[in-house]
Image 1 (spheres, rainbow, N blue to C red):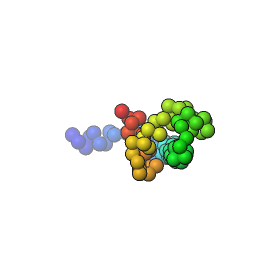
Image 2 (image 1 turned 90 degrees about the vertical axis):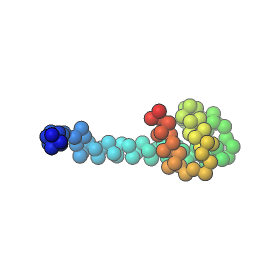
Image 3 (image 1 turned 180 degrees about the vertical axis):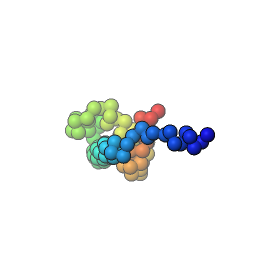
Image 4 (image 1 turned 60 degrees about the vertical axis):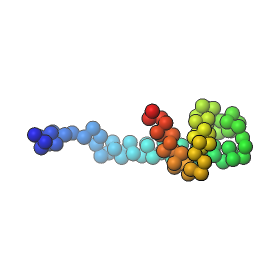
Length: 91
C-alpha cells in the first residue's frame, strides 16, 4: 500500500543536518563563483592559464577548466558558468 510506504519513510537528513549541508554547499558555490570571476577578469587582460593559476594559487587544471568553460560560453554570467561546471563534474 502507498500509505504504508509513506508512513515508514525516514528522511536521510534531519533538519539540522540539512541546514549544515546547505550552508556548506552555499559556501563552496560562493568560493567557486569568486574564482570564476577572478579567472574571467584575468583572462580578459590576456593572461595565460599558467599565469592565472600561479597568481590565484590554484592548479592549472582547475583554472583551465574554468577558462575553457568561459571561452565556450561567451557572454555567460558567472552563475551560468558555475552551472556548466557542476554539470561537467556530474558526468
